[in-house]
Image 1 (cartoon, rainbow, N blue to C red):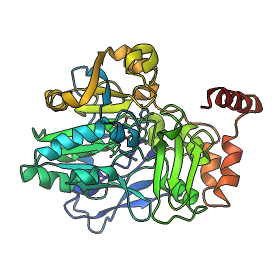
Image 2: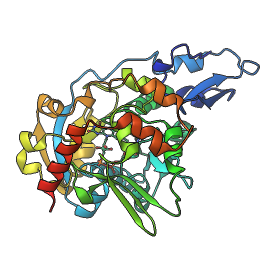
Image 3: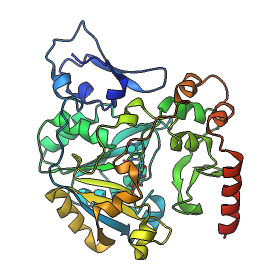
Image 4: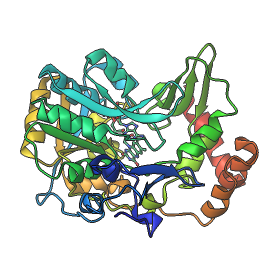
Length: 374
Ligand SMILES: Cc1cc2nc3c(=O)[nH]c(=O)nc-3n(C[C@H](O)[C@H](O)[C@H](O)COP(=O)(O)OP(=O)(O)OC[C@H]3O[C@@H](n4cnc5c(N)ncnc54)[C@H](O)[C@@H]3O)c2cc1C
């Protein structure tokens, strides 16, 4: 039976919840707002499937190194709505064209991020764009298994630990399953996200963590409702807590799922440093970094070849400016204190104390913006 001895080992992937034949494991939120499995011992039959299908116990990876690319979706509108080069939408559309289904992270009506299934191209907009909150998996792995058993093509997208969770849940290869993970900085606490939202009145709002109207590299956080709220991500306190690693899940500081060789077929990220590696692929509107790790992944990428600009690059060049591919975020010493303050006062007032930049850095940012203002 699964017991969490070290919180930093559990990524909250939900594999145990999905595999349990007695449905006697539930996810419970801790004081930081992250969910961990808790077994109802009165119902548990000690079958140990939860442990056998836990990714922490199953660490094998792809053997081959991936092939690395820089890529841009030629559709300008989709690329603008996407966080990087807009590759996710094209790859997902190729699966829908085969009558398949796509799983990914979306906001629900209460602005909580959770994994959903999409079967129509027009609904891919729900998944488009990075949401910097840990997404709830729920029982979606069971749904993936059912889709595969019904002979459907499946495109599953999530953090590397969610892909690991799905694959250890399934326990076997499936020729119709494409897993696409992301380069991941780490996932913030849903409780901190709710705390942040408490100070804003939301009504039919569209939230973007990566609005490109101020540029791909200097992106903004926006809430689009009757009145549009826009703030440079580097000014927004929720985003600053994220970037400064204050709000991340304990397992993100020692991520077991990142690295060059992963379990997924495809990995997507931002191609930071593209202006140095491949300047002709840099136009300030977003360039994707792609790792393709399997034959299935190569075939899918080939299917969308005409709709993208694609350049092969070396792994070394891809990793050089994007350490999040291989290195976990470091845990700041103030994190413990910050976490204890969640919900105990106004978000902005408390968080500002922990994310404030030194005076000289603030001046540097102001000067940079004044020079680069269009
Ligand atoms: C929490 C988080 C941290 C990230 N950190 C980095 C980083 O440090 N460096 C880097 O290069 N790239 C990072 N990315 C990835 C990057 O922001 C883009 O998501 C990726 O490049 C795909 O972009 P796209 O333009 O192809 O498509 P987009 O349309 O932008 O991609 C959206 C995809 O991301 C998935 N997604 C969105 N939010 C979540 C979530 N909360 N949990 C799981 N899946 C989600 C959706 O299901 C969809 O598949 C991060 C993404 C997330 C969600």
